[in-house]
Each structure stands twice: as structure tokens, then as C-alpha cells.
Length: 393
Ligand code: SF4
Image 1 (cartoon, protein in one colour):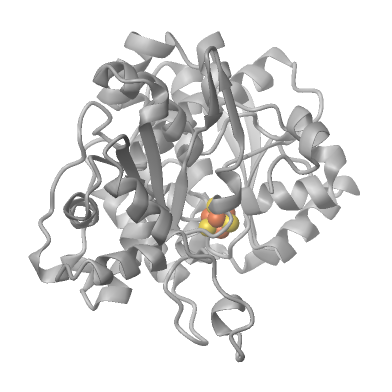
Image 2: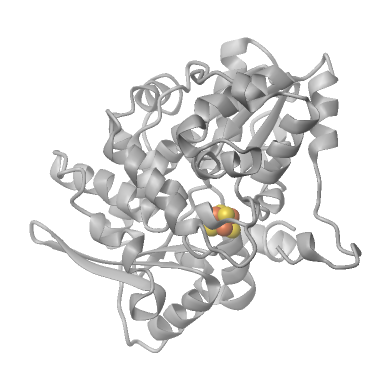
């Protein structure tokens, strides 16, 4: 955020809107866009709409009006990330293959950069699951390209994110059979999205609340809360419980990890959960100062957890560096409440009940953590570090 406030303009915010316009104008490219859950909570702040006037469907409509060929909601691939990560956690936890605890979440590139540079000896404890942004890109360039009957090279994947660090994450390489390249071709922040809408002279009042395209259309409440601190953990626990018990818990069974208690205990929310005779110790932290304190306590043996969610930005992605800025005010927790409200009112609240995710597994991946899923939806953090230091720029 300092970059946007540099008094002499010597530091400029990276702007990728030009390359996106070029891709839209290129007749050889099929532009396939995704919009992260946290963007819906904040884009209206830049365009003068009230939150009620700004559902995600209007962002999708704006993208189509600007020339995107297909538009999707990243909530779909947040559900996919939960399927992979919850299964990975249960597998590591139950089989005892999990000698070093805790397992850390891996969907925040700010956190990945931090652990790789500051605590490299803990990198092996990261989940190998890619983030929803990267998973969606991989699915668009394989499963969706197959559906369209085109080569992956024709697909230009664009993501709209609340996050500046996602621009670095997109440089993560993807290797799969005959295709090698990037999951994601361009990342725009919420602020860049608003800039594009303005420069296209689209009046926000004219936008319609349209649906995502098919076949990756559905997203559950569990996927939506990914954008707020505690959301990844809560969504993963809903599905991990189902994997262990073969039945759903009450949808709000794990709401103790939600953000209102964020300032307590040095920014760490922690809980001990009993699932029959299994006890799972979890913690949720956001903000890198809080994260450093937590990691140091873990290393000194003062606290013990099985599964830890870390988000670099205070409050999670709703407070991301690509969101609108309000000088001296922190809007992250109010935005987070909107996501929890959407979850409460969602028809589907469990990632494993997303019918489009289940169709994706039936038609393409087989099952979570299958060989194909590992090729496309997971990454090897240690190998990436060996090649490029922290894995990507
Ligand atoms: Fe990006 Fe911040 Fe979200 Fe991490 S918490 S993914 S750095 S917006």
C-alpha cells in the first residue's frame, strides 16, 4: 500500500490492465476469467455502489461486457482446494504419515514467501495443495480446454484478486504431459478491475447480476468464506469431518475459528475439536507479526497443533493489498462479515456437496489426491525452492 502513497510518484503500482486489453483484442486468444470471493466485498467501494447493489454476478457481467469470453467465480475452485486439502490433512493425520505437526495451509502467497524466506525448515509441513487461483487456471487449461476442443495455449487465464502477491504466485510453473506453462496468464487486483470498468465507460448501474458459465458454475458457502481469516480452516474442517464420519456436521459446528476474536491471544484463534475419539488441535492466524509469534511458540514447544491456517493480511484476503484503500481505516472485518452472511444464506455449505466439483472428479480427476490431481492441483514446495529460491518471484 506504500506504493500507492509514494509522495513523489517514484514507486508505481504494477498495472497489468494493458496486457489484459491486448489479450481481449487478440482473436487467437480465448479469455477465461475468474473472480476471487473477497473481491465481491470491496469492488463496490471503488465504484460508488452499495454492497447490496454489487453482487459478484455484476462483476462477471462487467468482464463479459469488456470482452472476456468465459467468466467464473473462484468460489468453485476454493471448493476444489478444500477437497484436496481436507483429504490431504485426513490422510496425513490418520495414517500417521504426519510425523511433524502441524500441517500449514498453502493458499496465501504472502505466507508462502514468508515461510520460505524466514522459516525454510518448516516448508515441508505446508500442504501441497495449490491455491484456488492456481487450481482454477490448471482446470481451465486442461478440463475446460478439452470441453471447448481447443489447445491449452489458446486459453488466456485472467484472475481478479484482492491481492498483489497473487501477481507473483502466477509465475509458478505448471508441467503436465505435453503442456508446460503457467496456470494463470494475468492477475488484476480489485483496484485494477475498477480502473478497467471506468476506462471501458461502463456505468455500474447498467450491470446485470449474471451467473457464471458452465460447467464450473456452482460454489458453496464453504468456498465463499475462503476470503476471510478462519474461512479456509472452517471449510476444510466441514469436509474433513465428513471424510472421517461419513456424515455432515452442523454447518456452523466450527464457527469458533471466525474472526471476531482475532485480537485475542496475539491474533491467534485456537481450538481443540473432538470428532469421536479423535482430537484435532487447530489454530488460525492472520498478519505476519502474529504469524511470527505463533511459529516461534510452536518451535519453542509452548503450543501444539495439528492444522494451522495462515493468512498474511490482517483479516485475510478481504483486507488484501489489492483492495480499495481507505486512509487510516481498516475495513477487512466488515467485509469478512459479508462473506459469512453469504455462507449462512447459501443453499450448499459443504464443498463436497458441490455438484460441479463432483462432476469434475467423476469426469476428469477420479478422486481427490489422485495421480492426475497431484499433477495439476498440487505443487512440490521443496523442489520449487531448490530451483528458484522461494518458488516464484
Ligand atoms: Fe493475498 Fe493477503 Fe489473501 Fe494472502 S491474505 S492471499 S497476501 S490477499
